[in-house]
Amino acid sequence: MLLQTVRPNIVQSIRAFRVEDLMQAAQGAEQHFLYANLTTAQSKQDVLESIAQAFMFPAHFGKNLDALYDCMTDLVHKSGAQPGFVVVLEQLPDNPRFDREAREQLLDVFRDAADYWAERKIPFRCFYSFQ
Image (tube, rainbow, N blue to C red; front, side):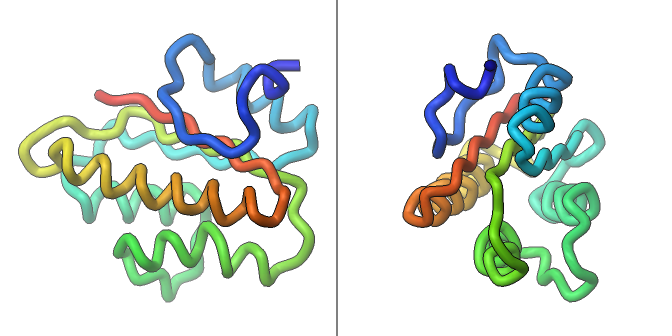
Protein backbone atom coordinates (compact mmCIF):
# COMPACT_ATOMS: atom_id res chain seq x y z
CA MET A 1 0.00 0.00 0.00
CA LEU A 2 1.26 3.43 -0.96
CA LEU A 3 0.81 5.07 2.45
CA GLN A 4 2.98 2.46 4.15
CA THR A 5 5.97 3.89 2.27
CA VAL A 6 5.41 7.38 3.72
CA ARG A 7 6.02 8.32 7.35
CA PRO A 8 2.65 8.81 9.10
CA ASN A 9 3.04 12.46 10.19
CA ILE A 10 4.92 14.46 7.60
CA VAL A 11 4.71 17.36 5.19
CA GLN A 12 6.63 16.70 1.98
CA SER A 13 6.84 17.47 -1.71
CA ILE A 14 4.50 15.36 -3.81
CA ARG A 15 7.40 14.47 -6.17
CA ALA A 16 6.91 10.91 -7.42
CA PHE A 17 3.35 10.57 -6.15
CA ARG A 18 0.29 11.15 -8.29
CA VAL A 19 -2.75 12.86 -6.79
CA GLU A 20 -5.05 10.07 -7.96
CA ASP A 21 -2.85 7.42 -6.31
CA LEU A 22 -2.84 9.36 -3.04
CA MET A 23 -6.62 9.70 -3.18
CA GLN A 24 -7.05 5.97 -3.76
CA ALA A 25 -4.59 5.17 -0.97
CA ALA A 26 -6.49 7.43 1.43
CA GLN A 27 -9.77 5.78 0.48
CA GLY A 28 -8.22 2.33 0.85
CA ALA A 29 -7.01 3.24 4.34
CA GLU A 30 -10.38 4.87 5.10
CA GLN A 31 -8.66 8.19 5.80
CA HIS A 32 -9.83 11.70 4.94
CA PHE A 33 -8.54 12.99 1.60
CA LEU A 34 -8.29 16.78 1.47
CA TYR A 35 -7.32 18.28 -1.88
CA ALA A 36 -6.80 21.89 -2.91
CA ASN A 37 -5.75 22.91 -6.41
CA LEU A 38 -4.18 26.35 -6.02
CA THR A 39 -3.41 27.05 -9.68
CA THR A 40 -5.37 30.32 -9.72
CA ALA A 41 -4.19 31.56 -6.32
CA GLN A 42 -1.71 34.43 -6.44
CA SER A 43 -1.57 35.76 -2.86
CA LYS A 44 -1.70 34.48 0.70
CA GLN A 45 -5.36 35.51 0.89
CA ASP A 46 -6.12 33.63 -2.36
CA VAL A 47 -4.37 30.53 -1.03
CA LEU A 48 -6.26 30.60 2.27
CA GLU A 49 -9.60 31.19 0.53
CA SER A 50 -8.96 28.34 -1.92
CA ILE A 51 -8.00 25.94 0.88
CA ALA A 52 -11.04 26.98 2.95
CA GLN A 53 -13.35 26.37 0.02
CA ALA A 54 -11.74 23.08 -1.04
CA PHE A 55 -11.66 21.69 2.52
CA MET A 56 -15.19 22.97 3.25
CA PHE A 57 -14.20 25.03 6.29
CA PRO A 58 -17.03 26.72 8.19
CA ALA A 59 -18.25 30.13 7.02
CA HIS A 60 -16.68 31.78 10.08
CA PHE A 61 -13.15 30.71 8.98
CA GLY A 62 -10.92 33.73 9.68
CA LYS A 63 -8.74 33.36 6.56
CA ASN A 64 -5.47 33.60 8.46
CA LEU A 65 -2.82 31.05 9.44
CA ASP A 66 -4.04 30.70 13.03
CA ALA A 67 -7.56 29.97 11.81
CA LEU A 68 -6.16 27.45 9.32
CA TYR A 69 -4.37 25.64 12.13
CA ASP A 70 -7.52 25.62 14.26
CA CYS A 71 -9.58 24.18 11.41
CA MET A 72 -6.97 21.49 10.67
CA THR A 73 -6.69 20.43 14.31
CA ASP A 74 -8.99 21.41 17.16
CA LEU A 75 -12.17 21.85 15.12
CA VAL A 76 -11.74 18.45 13.47
CA HIS A 77 -10.62 16.79 16.72
CA LYS A 78 -13.79 17.98 18.48
CA SER A 79 -15.96 16.40 15.78
CA GLY A 80 -15.06 12.88 16.92
CA ALA A 81 -12.58 10.08 16.34
CA GLN A 82 -10.49 10.52 13.19
CA PRO A 83 -9.02 7.75 10.99
CA GLY A 84 -6.20 9.84 9.52
CA PHE A 85 -5.58 12.42 6.80
CA VAL A 86 -4.00 12.68 3.39
CA VAL A 87 -3.76 16.35 2.38
CA VAL A 88 -2.68 17.55 -1.07
CA LEU A 89 -1.85 21.19 -1.79
CA GLU A 90 -1.29 21.25 -5.52
CA GLN A 91 0.33 24.16 -7.36
CA LEU A 92 1.23 26.49 -4.49
CA PRO A 93 2.02 29.90 -5.99
CA ASP A 94 5.61 30.97 -6.55
CA ASN A 95 5.54 34.71 -7.16
CA PRO A 96 6.29 38.01 -5.37
CA ARG A 97 2.79 38.07 -3.79
CA PHE A 98 3.31 34.56 -2.35
CA ASP A 99 7.04 34.22 -1.91
CA ARG A 100 9.20 31.58 -0.29
CA GLU A 101 8.61 32.99 3.19
CA ALA A 102 4.83 32.91 2.74
CA ARG A 103 4.99 29.32 1.45
CA GLU A 104 7.12 28.24 4.42
CA GLN A 105 4.70 29.90 6.86
CA LEU A 106 1.81 28.04 5.24
CA LEU A 107 3.66 24.72 5.25
CA ASP A 108 4.64 25.31 8.89
CA VAL A 109 0.93 25.33 9.76
CA PHE A 110 0.61 21.90 8.15
CA ARG A 111 3.78 20.71 9.93
CA ASP A 112 2.28 21.88 13.23
CA ALA A 113 -0.96 20.07 12.36
CA ALA A 114 1.06 16.91 11.61
CA ASP A 115 2.66 17.21 15.07
CA TYR A 116 -0.75 17.77 16.67
CA TRP A 117 -2.15 14.60 15.11
CA ALA A 118 1.05 12.64 15.83
CA GLU A 119 0.55 13.34 19.54
CA ARG A 120 -2.87 11.72 19.15
CA LYS A 121 -1.41 8.79 17.17
CA ILE A 122 -3.41 9.73 14.06
CA PRO A 123 -1.61 9.77 10.70
CA PHE A 124 -1.51 13.14 8.92
CA ARG A 125 0.36 13.25 5.63
CA CYS A 126 0.54 16.45 3.63
CA PHE A 127 1.91 16.62 0.08
CA TYR A 128 2.50 19.80 -1.88
CA SER A 129 3.72 21.03 -5.25
CA PHE A 130 4.62 24.46 -6.64
CA GLN A 131 3.43 26.25 -9.77
